[in-house]
Image 1 (cartoon, one colour):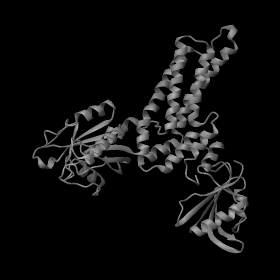
Image 2 (cartoon, rainbow, N blue to C red; image 1 turned 180 degrees about the horizontal axis):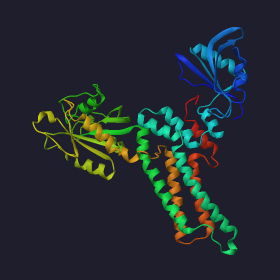
Image 3 (cartoon, helix red, strand yellow; image 1 turned 90 degrees about the horizontal axis):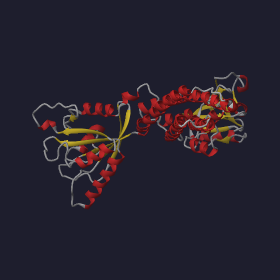
Image 4 (cartoon, rainbow, N blue to C red; image 1 turned 120 degrees about the vertical axis):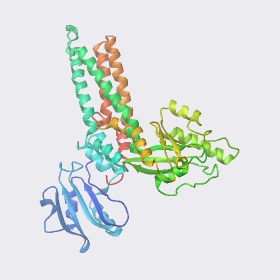
Length: 450
C-alpha cells in the first residue's frame, strides 16, 4: 500500500480520450519527469488542471491535460494524478511504459477503491457500492447503488451500532463492579432497543429480494399453453421480432431470454415452451426447461387465449399452486381481446391484444406495481449477498441477547451476545478487523483502474 500504482481508467481500444490514473506518494513527482508545461506539477494546488505535453526523450508523445488531487482531498486519500490523453493505443501504451520505467507498478483490479477504504475515504459497504454503480444498467439499480455509495446503508448501520455500543459498555462496566451488585444498564431500555433493532434489521433483510432483483434484473417467465401468445408478447415488449410466431402448436421448443428496461427497472424476460402433454421428445425437453424457468423467475406472466375455455385462466392450476407456495408474483393476462366484441374490466386480470397493443401499458404498470416499489420508497435497500448474510447473523445474535435477558443470565454472557451482534453489523461496513482474504475477494471483482 506504500508504492505508487497506475492503471488505464477508461476502456481498452481506440477512442477520442483516455484517462490514465496514478495514486501514491510519488504520483506527482513521477509524472513531473515526463510532463512539460509552464508550471511544474509539484507547484500547483490540489484540484487543478494543467495543459502540457508528455515527451519520450525529446519526442512529443501527446498533448494532455493533467488533473492533480493532493492527499487527503482525493478519491484514494493519497496524491492522485489523472492524465487525459488522446485515445490512441500507441499513446496509451507509451505513457504507461514511461511511467512504469519510473518505479510505478500496474494496479490490481479494485486497488484504487481498496486504498480509499484503507485510508478511511469509504467504508466497506460504500466501496462495494462503487462496483455496483459502475455495473448499473437501469435507473433503479443506479439509484440503489448511488444511495449506498453516499452512505445510505452505512448511516443506518452506524445508528444501530452506536446504541448497541453504549449498552455493551454499560453491561461491561457492571462486570467491573460485580461484587457490589450494581446495575448501570437499564434492562427495560435494553429490551426496547433490541426490539427496535430487530424491526430495523428485519426491514433491511426483507429489502434484499427487491434490491437484488433490481441489481441483477428481475427475471420474468412468460408461461401458458401453446398458441396463447407467449412469443407474440415477448416480441411486443421488445418491439422486435425476437421469437418465432406461428399458429403451429409447439413452435417454441426452448426458452428464449431477453433483457429490457421498463420504467427504470431492468427485466429479464424468458419466453418458454407451451405447457402441455406432448409426444414430441424435443418439445418435452423444452417443457421441462419451462418448469425450471418458472422456479428461477420472480414474476410469472400466465398468458392465455381469452376465447379458449379449456385452457383459460386456471388451466395450468398445478403450476399456479406451486407458484403461490413459493411466494412468486403472478400476473394473469387474457390475450386476443381484439377477437371478442365486448368490454373487459378486472382488478386481477390484464386484458391484452398482442395484435393491437391494447392493454400493454396496463401490463407494464402491473409489473412495476407487483414488485411493491412503493414499499421501499425512501427506505434503505440492500442488494449485496454478503450484507444479507451478516444481517441474518446479527439477527440471530439479537435473539440470543433477548433470550439471555428473559432467562436473567449473567452479564458476561449478555455482553458476549451484544459483541457478536456488533461484530456482524461491523462486518458490513468494515468497522472491525476484516480478514485479508475477504478484502481480496471483494475488491478483486472491480474493474482495473477503479
